[in-house]
Image (cartoon, rainbow, N blue to C red; front, top):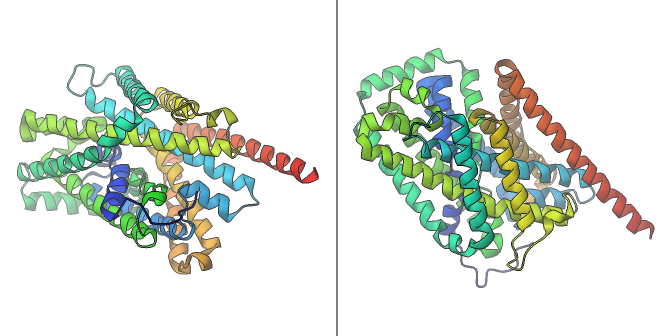
Length: 444
């Protein structure tokens, strides 16, 4: 659906940045710190920064295509409109986007459960963690089925509140840190010298999922003022802001919490060492911040992705049943399937599997978008060098994660590969079905 005019539009730059930041600052930052600390220690902030640079590279094509098309369908719409004769391209992108959202929904729910259970004896019980994750999915499923309007009213408040809490947590970590600045920098540079560049780049690629969500700005194109100016300013501004937030939080955590504590409690890394540093009240603030951030992200993901799944189903690339809506215009079948598939991914995978599958998927989607922009770069006013640099960077990100999986977790790699075979088969079958329908129409 194209943007038509700015008359009556209510979303300005501030609101659009809030949408993008709210989409990015979810469960990712709370889950990647412990995993990154385990892999590269004090070099974690460097990897987080490089992950942000990769996100900026990906954002370049989203911005160019978003301004050119002004279509709230974002990724899926860009590919469908750029390659109108290719049902396969639209189907593949549609399936990747939706299952990418399913992985992030699983990640947010799993991270919520890890922090929610961290205060109890069941903290390390994997089945209790999965049960809690399923429970929060069910809560937001019911909210989106029956009370979407009510949840929408508090979404902005949740975004700004979680940012304030993250800032307070970071300041508390830095001011109560056990390390002197000199000692911290000594450990930082030691790990920089000892850590292979390849390992840093792998972690940077894995952290990409923590920046997923900036494209939500484009989904709001019909409600924004001056999209030609506000799409690029909102997306780039939000990514830079989120990079800053993540860096401050990462430095603060490493400055205050012993590395072994971050590694030991990697699923709930910040809470695991916070009580020893900033006391019980500070630990509870960390947990509250994590629960608020993940809740906000779950709510937004369930809401937006279910509607995108319904739109793709209406185009014939998913079963038509997923396009059904109730009297409130809620796509209840798509909503149900999204939540059930997220619950299934939680059942069969742990945090690292979900995190790495999500990162690979969204880098692949961003790579397809970068290629799409390259094809029509003359129309979008994109620089050839910048577009090619984005394609090369994103391709490198995919290769790095796959290399790590193949070398260190081949069984996990096999599982991820199997998922992609299923996704590819499903996309191909529905694309062929659309092609046959088009052929029948043309013959008639």
